Length: 117
Image 1 (cartoon, rainbow, N blue to C red):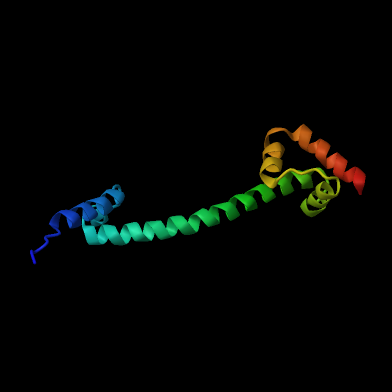
Image 2 (cartoon, rainbow, N blue to C red):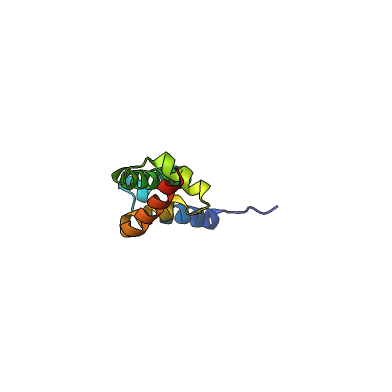
């Protein structure tokens, strides 16, 4: 059986990994073994942080809604419960955007919720 040399295959695989590590600091961007570890770690962090980003944004939206609600004399939990009972189906992202950009419309929502309770 003839001998199969894998130099070209290995070189292409190495080049692909080093290309993914472009922009990393030090030897992590040029040496294959260092680059491989850096790319693996970056992939792990990216996967984890895609989940964490959703949590972080939700916390931010809740904080913004709560701040505007308290300025208008109602707590966040009472406001959200009032929205639920009055069948106003707006998610927290939209409510936070409304609170930041269009306070008059947000105040109308608060008044509707206060009228229910």
